[in-house]
Image (tube, rainbow over all chains, first blue to last red):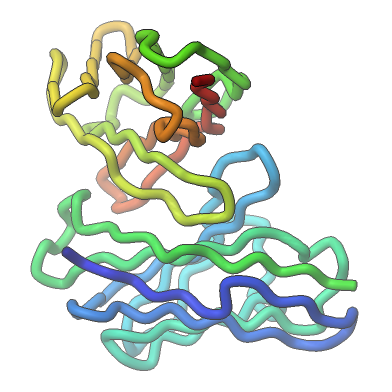
Length: 119
Length: 110
């Protein structure tokens, strides 16, 4: 089945530094990738939708300049948290949608998540 | 009002019990209904999906949708300790976005 690899699985960084999280679709091409944020015991909140070769679409309230998303190829999307602060500490999860399934819902595969701790 | 409401629990049951997990939603435009299982510190994995009202069974799991009441359920029969996880309902809208419920934390005790 479809596999999405997300790295790193956890990262600790100092306040003010930037952190990059990678999301790769291993055995399929993903025209669209989604980035979510999840706080403890809370649901997944969609941050942004990225389409290969174009700018990401951010959800209301998500700072574009803080959460930089790049989707340069059909198998790779990156999320960079710039000038991270302790309030950015969270669990970040990516999801990829297979190209062949178009808009069909079952084309979504999730990565294993990245736990970011900013100290 | 949230688009999807789900009781966060936690829910604790003995091994072998029947578990009932539920979500309500407010937008009748939702067309697809999913249940995801999420183990601690992992990404969600799709358990089941349904499109129409009615029941869908897969092994020990049964998904139920009642569009008239905007109510979806997941039943787990003969629950096992390995079923201990957070269960999230998710609804898919025509905009291509998955809207998740808060998730219900389930613990199955041996």
